[in-house]
Length: 320
Image (cartoon, rainbow, N blue to C red; front, side):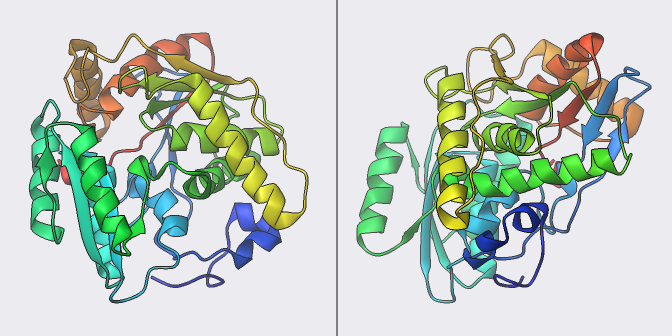
């Protein structure tokens, strides 16, 4: 892992002034795209599960910026559900930077992957209590912040963290321009705290690409709102504008939230998600998790009937 200025990115190439923002190199470079023609001729997948080692997935993208100021001996605090991959990513990478990591968690419907993630969090975090509700976890985290711990927002979804996902979206644009895949009409991603969806939408606006980002909601409606995604994207655009002095477009359309795949509770498996995950595993050997990616992939298969569709894989199956 290296500090700011040690690596380039599509985002920095477009806005060189952003190189002054502290960041830490965690990702491996462009993640591959693959054609899932055996499932549907119009379906592709972005393998962001391979974004980093030892743990990939979408959360690492945001942490390149959110952990940019962390040094040995620091303390870091975040919150999430009991089996949150965000919490695990913060725990693993902040620890490797020499920080003590404290995480407040809340109960969720558990599935096989969530159980494994929860066990790893418990082993690696300095403290990782589980509260009955998010209120208790946030209150506990406030106490840690008042004692000087660096706050990493839930899901890494802040204007600063979204920059990592903007970079990922511009990475995809570069792959399209190099002919690695046809320009998709839709990009489908799970929608939790909204950072990935917001960053991709802003990236496509910056690159003037007519791509609709479809977020498949896997959290309660109060969290997974299209208005929140737009706000997050546009606050990140304002951040880029302030630092670079360059006008940045805003996200007003080309974002859509699908609610039908939720299943009634965060982490609860659905039949459609299970069947889609089985189909992908048997066809490609790629595993999906029940909380996020299986639900989104089931919808991506359906969306591909309407045009070329890219499914953004945010889950690292090494957690399986």
